[in-house]
Length: 310
Image 1 (cartoon, rainbow, N blue to C red):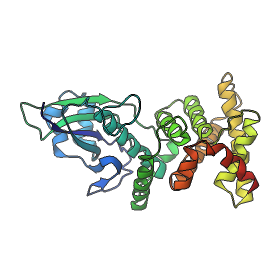
Image 2: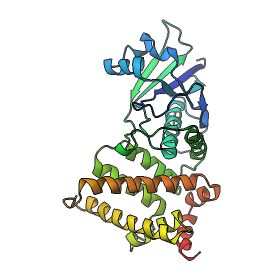
Image 3: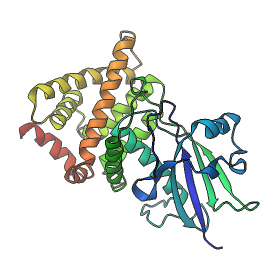
Image 4: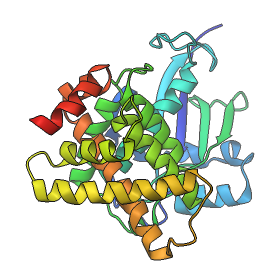
């Protein structure tokens, strides 16, 4: 069987035009491009299997896509770069690479940018002998406070930097960063407040949770505070208070959904606070090679405990 050039494309949903005007391809790690939507994506031969709503979006609303090209004999060909016990396919690698790109954009600046459709097709389109496979996916759901966030050129450049780091992190059970990022993607697809809030805490505990669970609330608040504000005692104290309060509500969710005293205003505030802690923490780690090494190894525990005494 001869090899073919395939392209995996994810049309970007951006209802509030957070991306602005992008005229050229923006390269991200592992061959992913953020680019204006290619004309072939709108061809009837590609779109006829989609729903009427999806066809309408592609025709009138979608301006950009995430895309990745690769040459293989078939979509289920194993990815030669994957070293795990269960090698993924090249198509799965393409999808994972696109997800990491989308995640990097969120880490750079949260917005409405996401996707819920992926198209795999052979290029060039050679009719009548063409192939197109469509997949549906849960998209990233933005916090209401982030709906109108516009991404500047510097935000996009920062996303490229974060994406480069994300593409290199170890995908092992010792890597707190990998566990946190994998959980974060699932978190951001959740709309129900309780599930979203709880999963954000799973991300934070993957990064900062002590192995010894005794006094976890107090220790977690100290670890986050000293990590994010090592040289600013006032700010560190403020962070610690917020973590202590947020963890209280996290526990109420876990232990029976006892939320009758949580007002709608406070629920919105504490969700934004935990989202902000996650973003600040991951951005600081991903921008520092030494921190990436520490949070990808057993050194994490000692490092976080030693912060308090430095």
